[in-house]
Amino acid sequence: MKSHEKLLLENKAWAEEIRHREPDYFERLAADQKPKFLWIGCSDSRVPADIIVNAEPGEIFAHRNIANQVIATDFNCLSVIQYAVQVLRVEHVIVCGHYNCGGVRASLSPQSPDLSLLNKWLMHLKDIYRMHRHEIDAIESIKDKADRLVELNVIEQVRRLSHLSIVQTAWATYQAPMLHGWVYALDDGILQQLITLPANSDIDVIYQQLETPA
Ligand code: CO
Image 1 (cartoon, helix red, strand yellow):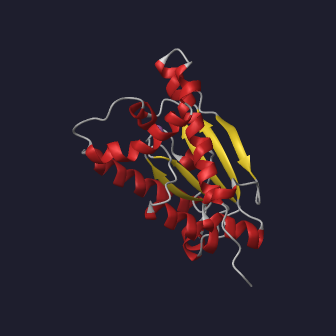
Image 2 (spheres, rainbow, N blue to C red):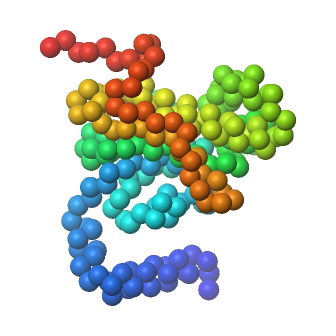
């Protein structure tokens, strides 16, 4: 059997098993979605959002990209955030990074001549390294350097979320969502919290959105 055919077969078995357990499951789920969480994670196949927090379909709205980045010119990520925050009114936005992240490790190396597009995506990580160069350069092993950059990247992405007008408007209007930065360890499957920004946390003045006149 080809590997993609196995996925289709597994899907049939999965749907059958759920229907057996709860006959109206799909009908109920198809009617609407009211997720409380937006998950912004890495595309890495070893960090599947729903599975590692034991969530059911319908619980987590998700966006994943290489090294879980929130970039203010990325319409894909921003559209997901806008829909999740303004329309679905999620209560929490979670940025989840993971140790041993290939994207973060690659960002600590020179640009690869044959990955011109990926190089540009990784530039944003290089900038975070440059902001924290003093701290990271003092760490001895390459692995530990990269793992510290994983943590600093998560913290920076949560701050970037707070810089978005979408988030600031939601904070002013309905005191949500709360922003979280987590990191996942591949070797034990455990998540750790790195940063939490409740609604209306202090934001550096240059990132604040001016109030619109009444
Ligand atoms: Co990764």
